[in-house]
Length: 393
Image 1 (cartoon, rainbow, N blue to C red):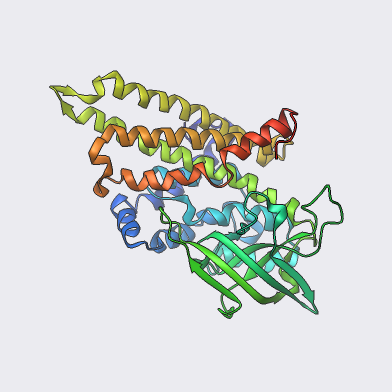
Image 2: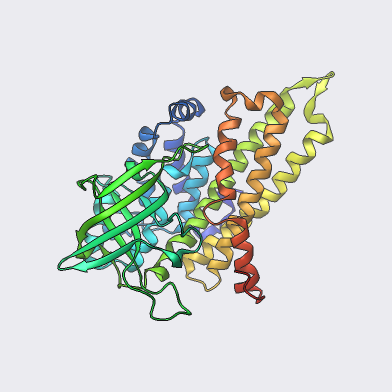
């Protein structure tokens, strides 16, 4: 399914977005991404090209220079990036973080930063949430922020923070007070938009975490980091509520990346199955080869349909948007990972060779089984919040 499957009222807009994305992705082939991966480098050339084309600003209102569109259009872009062989992670944080800044930031904050983000003069591609002892359980955040005159003073530690060394602005979640209600442990958490370009490294130290995929992930050590009082996004103490504007958009954007990966795996598995001849016939003539690919295609199409449904609900502000966003991410991650394994198996030993790119995309796709939000937590959410069963955690 592509942008052509959207409603007729929005087809032209989605197709415009898709063509804008293709104009960028067509310039970066698998050779480029393979070289970046082998060097463990950041895809700076691609990121710059995407920013110059304005792909990162699709969810920024037009009055600040953005496209003024929604997560539906953002998902079209990230799908195309992953389908082309790349990784939407290079720019996707600028998309889902916009939900927090645009919906809850003060007018002064938006006027100060959004035009600069849109123009590409300033980069926002990092969202600092996770901590060593507060992964999925966000209410246990230990990073603190206290107001001292006209500055906030932040202290704490963050982990698995992607692209931290390649951003200018960073959205950071920190606790500004204890929760006044034991039944609502998320209260007292606030959200900040912080300029880290001139920060003393002693106040914000970074350690790169070597991982199986090339997402440039860091551990952050925050020591008496002082930031202006107007760095606060929205109201103090209710950042946990704001957080889900970003997380639900993230789930949909990531679902689209999974869809893009799935299409990439299908294209290569089908071509190889048709071209590879053993025992006098293409291996794709064997049901043991063709059925897993066809099964994966069917599951991917179902997940894609849920992606469109979730995106429409989010953009409309529907009450069931969180439910649909979680389902979309869950189904898309499952479908794309099954296809990753199927593609690898179809290629056999060649799938392990770097020159074929299967192992690179295989590694990249595996993260979606872990983050953002694990399959277990999606099922917990659906069981408790949607189906009304007792809470299990």
